[in-house]
Length: 498
Image 1 (spheres, rainbow, N blue to C red):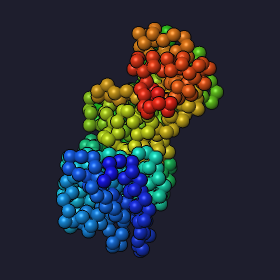
Image 2: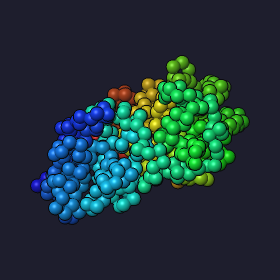
Image 3: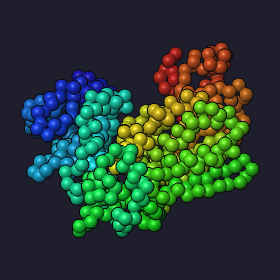
Image 4: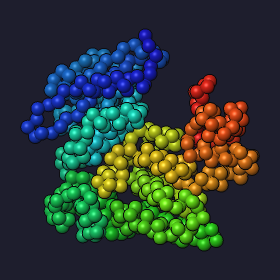
């Protein structure tokens, strides 16, 4: 009898996934590789009693891995103490035609209360609906570790590419699972109120053949859950209006980005980006590039190639805010605040569970979208990663520019991403009482640590050219001040920036 180890069963699910059998389909549709692992625990313990696995097509061509596991292998078993690991998001109720049940329904009916999901269903019209269904029915959902998610993506690359182009089964499907009111609400505008510039920009980047004023183009947007059919004409839903509406704030006041620059002399400049949101990242960067050289010409970080790295960080942050903010919080907008030391991007809404602030700050949060429809459009516009939050990219860009790593903080109801514009900002932005408690050597050490995120005492000693005892004293002081936390033990203990 072994102890429960989530990582072990994630890896087993991937090994099982790789046995999946492809199907000979006339429509050339690529089917996914999916592995499922059911771990039965002893009641009220972490001891594992039994492990059962299944993969797609194992017992019959086309059968989902979860169906094979729950209905063919474990049908007569009581599964209350079981934890399920599945490499692909279980399909939501609306994804299967009656009388078939979605895999998420089968899981709930089996009374399984904990599920680990590898990756979301890549089809933007059903993405995260299986996860949401489970959560709404009392199931605790975790995501696989990010490095394992990348393996699943790689193994299913062809399936994912096809899935991202597929539409929902019906344009006007009445979805049982709603991720946001914007996917079903109508702001009351007609399609001629959408920006032709924004639509053309999307058409060009997404390589859509149909002209923007053609019925075929409208049908394509409807299949992407951006329009819906009312009578004999297409009407933009909330997502369509937000992305392409000429003035989306007329019907949705929470939409838009309010940008503020605070100059060293006390002056302030404000601009409200309230047009088609799909154009906001480009327009905002152009506005910033016209202003920032006058604001931070004292900063070496804004010279040469580092300049572009910073603008890329800001672009990533703004796109993340547009894609992942909670639009059901109607009394709040995205804000961008620029000072000589930092850029703050303030976004309404906590990270979507099971993503946490801690995982965001470690830049290893699992890939998960709050608004998959928006994510799909921005990905097609080449402004967002196909999956995930752009975390790896933001970390690497900051490191390349020699800047402190971006920092996430939460102050209900806002998630704030802080991008530092120079190395001095690592100390300049500290609370005054903490800054006063650091001597000059410790301040130098903290500025170095802020660019690395985590270190060991030996790495710190080498970087700061000091003996190991002094290095440990510095790091212990940082821990006491709440600037870093420790993990591990002994010589391999890690110090991680909070």
